[in-house]
Image (tube, rainbow, N blue to C red):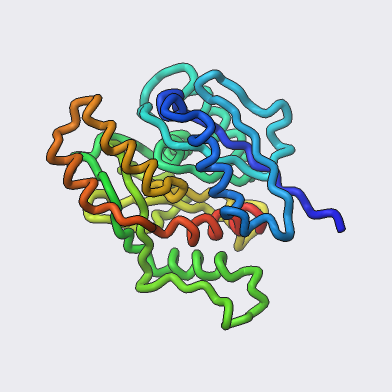
Length: 266
């Protein structure tokens, strides 16, 4: 039996993060969408890396089932040519109802491209591991999406406990205004927009944009490395230490991996 194919373009937005370990950085996203092996039982997932910094883009952008836009040290509101071009491409994808998933910088540039605003967070760095309190309607949307292929089997039902998820965070910018046709997924003490979602215009009830401010694709070792490395850009050592103290060995990584996979296939 031939498996159906899911084609995902991974838009890499930072050379410095790749510089730490190029293969490992890409594999974080590749493994994330593949569910660490669990999502490929009934479907073949094909991923390909495109460097937005180098202005790479699929020759036929509408032949891809979806796009993942990675995190970056860059600011989504900067006027670099590659950032402005990426915003134009996001608008084009969104106008054609192509699914887009953004993480951190990816989340922020989606907001900027579609009429929202990203800026420095006056509360400072959000570092470490933080609990996100989901909006009740978003928690319901996520629960339905997580269980959409469950065939009403309550024994295998995936639950979101207390309408909360836990993600690794490393950011100083945040989305302060969301685009008018999107909703915020939830909040932390430091940032009121911890992600966004938008309903598909051509398929009512389905989503075509999903984003997280946090990093569901990062594992403990990678987020620990990045936070420690902040001393190279003169972040206060106490801020770094406080962030490191919040880290736990696991997060809602696998739950969000399943959520994003179901987002792309439904």
